[in-house]
Length: 213
Image (tube, rainbow, N blue to C red):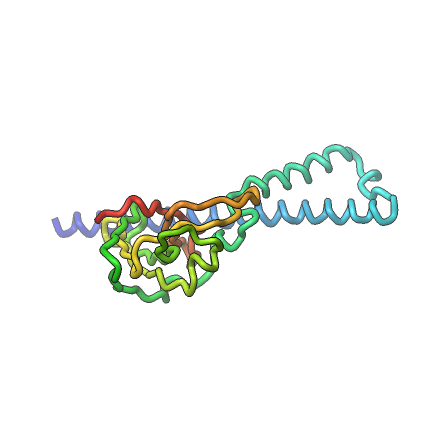
């Protein structure tokens, strides 16, 4: 029985290692694709700038000129369709996530517990939310203030993390969306979790109305 448990433990570790390598390679591929798209758009912009200044189109001497235009156009659409193309600060972040400490502060304005699911055991999770308010915050600066409505937690063995906001349920606030239209965002909690090799994930959103208590 003991030998069987050791074998199962080794198999589990190997599977986790393979999965981690797979996720990291996907992360590298995503970053490489983004870099290529930005380079193509930069080249296209420089060439059009030359044409605008000198009246000479450098691309005109290139065979299959229409293909060049198509490739640059596809690169632009690829960047536009990205979730955080106009808010890059919400994308993945490189940092030593393992150095983050955990907080155990409890709500002073009432008990508001939330559950983050389907994460890897042992992962660190950073979470934050707007300050409580009976009215809609007019700006994100007003909404988040000094970011005191936040915390850091560690995922349990079941792949879940129960969090509690120190200042209670967040209020709503005004912000421009992906299409630059100002809109009222609902009461939400934001969080990042550890990715392979020290990366922190892109910002995820949890509905603040899904509280446990």
